[in-house]
Image (cartoon, rainbow over all chains, first blue to last red; front, top):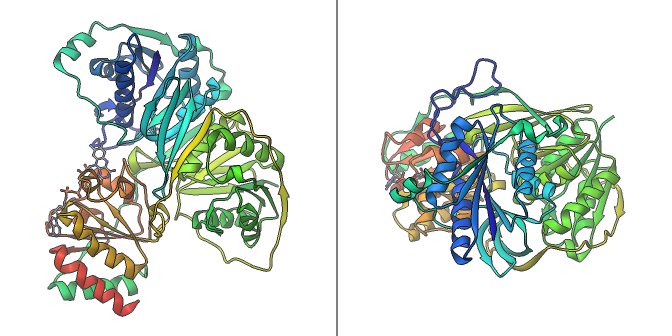
Length: 258
Length: 320
Ligand SMILES: Cc1cc2nc3c(=O)[nH]c(=O)nc-3n(C[C@H](O)[C@H](O)[C@H](O)COP(=O)(O)OP(=O)(O)OC[C@H]3O[C@@H](n4cnc5c(N)ncnc54)[C@H](O)[C@@H]3O)c2cc1C
């Protein structure tokens, strides 16, 4: 099987966000970059599938400035992926352009058996790239999957909806799947894994060489702002009964939310 | 003049509140408003949508649309959008909306923005607000190269206007051909809970590791029953198996924005805050005065939740 995983490098969740001077993006100088947490579930599922199918390969595909995203790709290789492809692009692209670049790059590698991604990148919060990529590739998709089973070219996945219901879907491969938390427990890269990863091949693709028409760009971000300062908290003192009484009074008469 | 199309979601013959929000904002923009409803209850939804000023609803009431299957919904919704002539589409940033519309957008060679917290419609011009970096900042987003602009709104962000039950609208039924399906629905397990979805709830009572064990969530359920609230949880207690993962609020759980969020025994880790900090009023109950949750709260009580919560339930009973 030819298994692909799309990986994005994102600021660590603990990073304090600062804005650049014109509010078009964030200041990245002090950012610690990590593999998008949902992509770790995608990588883990790909590696499990490879283990069950001798002769399979797992290829990591990532787009971004090569000097930076190489780390994320090496991390995935250290977990056990076979090789990587970096689409070198200094400037940030929107979701559609990125999806097109990933789709074209994967297509150029020959037919994929299955493509995994995370359900959402925690920086851009788009939650749509896997579906858009699936459309560009003409493949079926399932998102936010919490279980995965290979039934020989048919893939059975479960997806939970907000009401707590669970739907089970069967997809005829090849297909694009986006991973939710709970799909598995991602492994840590072992020390031998990290050593081995240093020698694994990473192919370079220049974003400009893909010749993606500029009409693929659908969105412009501007005026980034930090959330308004909340007025400071009102602490309610006293013994439990009095506290409860006062809180209910405030919610009813001051905040008026009851 | 612009033509705004609202994608309707409902349950048990009732429109979801998130859908009512979309219908209200569409109407108040002064645009012509049409709608799409799919599934066996589509006609009932169309009639309800008319009460919010929809002039025309496109429906597919075929049984096969009862449950969401992307393979079926993507082509059907794409065709209906084209048929409607809409240049702006509003839908909820629900699990269905987020799965469906990115692909519909790609088919229409147009853009979508998910998880929006505000939308401004001025004629054909649309600007939305969208939280980024787990809510640590937000941006204005505008569309480029998009004949149709698709906006997926987070629930509980917009005002619902008064329904006028004397209004009715045109209903256009269509029965699209079933495409060659590569995705089949094998099984559906419906949740047994009667409670409102977390993402739609007006009031949420959430518990964290401070609840100490699964059985103590009963205290929160009692409080929630009095308030008509839904119970949520931190990741720590979902991971511990005390409550199902569907109850998790936060970066890797659900994003919620109720009018009132009561956090009991939750420390307020950044990943938890990411999912609830845009709640209108936040109450924290925690025995550690240094807990970070207090910095994000409107009202704080330092104390033992096992003393406070039952007393709170009693006090609410008196006024509600
Ligand atoms: C990538 C990533 C994603 C994550 N996503 C999420 C997410 O989506 N949602 C989420 O919630 N977390 C998430 N987390 C985990 C998060 O970092 C915290 O570990 C978690 O939120 C802690 O849960 P808690 O507040 O219940 O537990 P704790 O941090 O242990 O806090 C328990 C609190 O209860 C208080 N307490 C104890 N006893 C009492 C009592 N008797 N009365 C009153 N108060 C009491 C304590 O003072 C303490 O403040 C994520 C972490 C990572 C790394």
